[in-house]
Structures are given as structure tokens and as C-alpha cells.
Length: 225
Picture 1 (cartoon, rainbow, N blue to C red):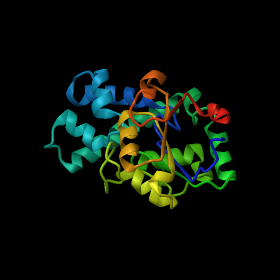
Picture 2: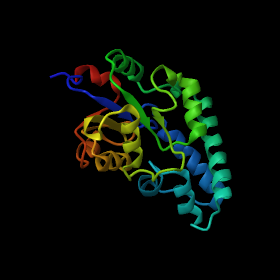
Picture 3: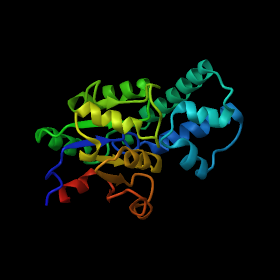
Picture 4: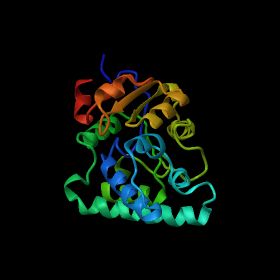
């Protein structure tokens, strides 16, 4: 049976899934945490408190719940501006994941509905749309980003919203994710199939993670599915 048989809809996380940028986010947070509170970030903290979380949650972790919405907005944009600078400075890696464009084109040609469900905010989402020409596959309704109106991953909200955006029940959606919080989010939403992308975590770890049905290194592997 082909991967495309009975495929109703596909939802992608973005960071670390369609764009392998995890090192850039980590570098930006390392620099910003040092600037903000003068300390290093451990690998465990990245896994538990940063990857897949909103900037508001991350900043509250570092600074405390007393941080004001205005401070969150200012610090968040400063960190993301640093991240975007790092992306643009590394032209060799500033491109969609290997095989992603071909895979997205194939899904589009087959008429399979697609959406993105990303923890990124609007500024970064607009940045990706512009530089990667994502309007070839997504629009403002199907590129679902963190606008502050729903709970972040690992809660199911964003995947429920993305499934609604493409008019497919969550059980009919195949989700591509790279991080535990996102996998938990998709599983809680009732996704029919979850494919983990081993962009920064090992295949072995992801294959053993509860809810994962398959693991790929990049989208060139989808031709054999």
C-alpha cells in the first residue's frame, strides 16, 4: 500500500520539521538567556521547557510569572530578531528540509489538503512565508501559528485548529513532528498517524516515543513509503 492511499489530510509542524532550524533557535536562546539572566541553558531545559513552547512560556520559565505582557512582547521580538539574523547569515542552511518541496508539490498535485501547525508567532511566520515562498502550498488560513488565542503544545489545540482549517477530522490527518511536545499535542488531538522527523533527535528515541508510527530523516524518504 502506498503512503498516499486513503490519505485525507497532512499537517506539518514547521521548525525542525519543514525547516531544520533547531540549532538556530538554540543558539538564539542561549545568547538571549545569557543576556537576560546571565546563565547557560542545559540540554534538559531545552527539551522540557523550550522546544515546542511559546515564547511567553519560555520567558516565564526564565524570568518568572511576574513578567508583564509588555515585557514578554519586547523580549520575544528581540530574541526572534536575533534568530532571524542567524538564519539569514547562514545561507547554506537557510532552505526547506531536503525533499520537502518535492513532497509538498506531490501532495498538492494529488489534491490532498495540507496545513502547518507551528508554535512560531506571526513575525516569524511571515518571515518563512516570504523567504520560502510558502504561498505555493499554504495561505493565511492553513498556516496556523501561535497568535495567543489557544494553548500551546503539548495541548492539542493547535492541531485541532489546523485540522479544522483543512476540513479533515483529526483522525484522518497524518502529522509530521520533530519534538516530544508536538508529538504529544498531535496524539492528544487524535491524529490518525504521526510521523516523526529526526532532524535533531535520534531515530531510536523517536521510534520508541509513544504515538509515533514512523520516523524519517528527511522527505526524500517519503518516495519509498
